[in-house]
Length: 264
Image (cartoon, rainbow, N blue to C red):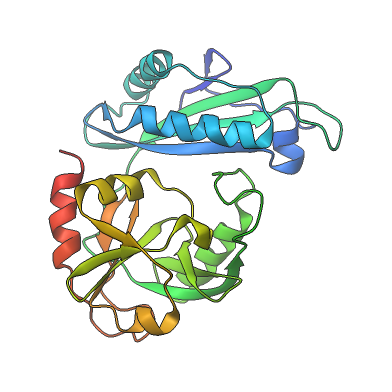
């Protein structure tokens, strides 16, 4: 049985109020963190983004880094996740409220489960689903994640590992579960936040490790990229073995170098 932390209590039976904003509307936010041999990666950064998401949603503030770290350490122990990779999830959602109003109460759940091995490379394909770069939730890792999951499911049904989403201007925004980087003429690039991509924690870390230019990415430009890789907090940095447009083999030099430095 998996043990969860829910509103201050440890439990093996996670429960969600069926008429809460979280259950009925997907009104909430979440963060996914990596643990390596019980060392939790970037707690402060993930908590800061979660707090920002809650502000956008008009939900109550929540979370103290020290308390969260203590809860995660306990969950790693209870769920036998103290060695190797583990996947931590912080989920916060609104309680009961009228339509058009933000809930005054917040429900929070933290979980920890064993993590999977990260592949050396992945394959991605374009999705017909569009990211709305002008939407209210572009900077929020919201519970209403259906667009991303449908795009990912359709990509996997075609034999790919990730889906690449364009925005309404037909520019590349991000992956369904990742941010995207590309190498062009010896320089590293990533789409700007104005593209509608999530301000990824790992994206920011990569940009601090290596000088990166934020520029719009058209399909034509992507097809000419020397190397393409994706990032998220569980995968770290993973190169795409093939260009998502041409499906021709892609290099992985930059991704391999960044991967080795990311969690040091």
